[in-house]
Length: 214
View 1: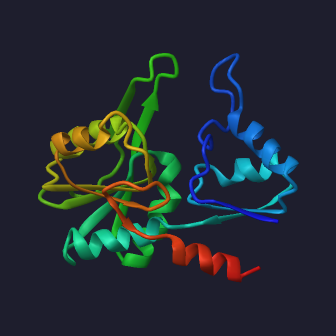
View 2: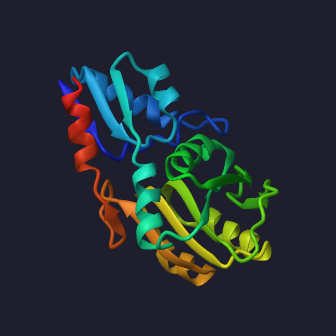
């Protein structure tokens, strides 16, 4: 039995951040195991290593972020030079792979979150010249958009001229898209793992290719 879950819910709760919290991902995987699933396929899961730690099921993680970055290169920046940036250290490898394929510069921002208040602070880490350039913020999930709003303020202070945002899974809670546009983003791009008006990249072909590997 192969189970395909394009957007794996609860994947971000892969450990106990505060005393008393449940490890929701571990619970979800236990339920999936109880159904007799032998193989699990998902797309740009938040922490693939955690899934492999919590279950004996074969797990395959499909990467869609590069396809989203390619779409941005063609449809947003029109072939112009731009920089791909991860909003945090955890997404560096995702951004590095995309930048390597597209032959672009890449970097990341330093993000710190207060686990009690949820407040996020963002600061730059790069020495790459930003003035007058375009930036594509690439993440796995855009939920409330709070981190990307903070990132926009940081990058505009560095002289960035054009901002666009992309993620594989666009949850866009509480009108996050409106907040992103108000913060200065000109475009939001995502896949159709979660259907939104900004789901411009389809993952069906990537999933079909992964199934054919078995």
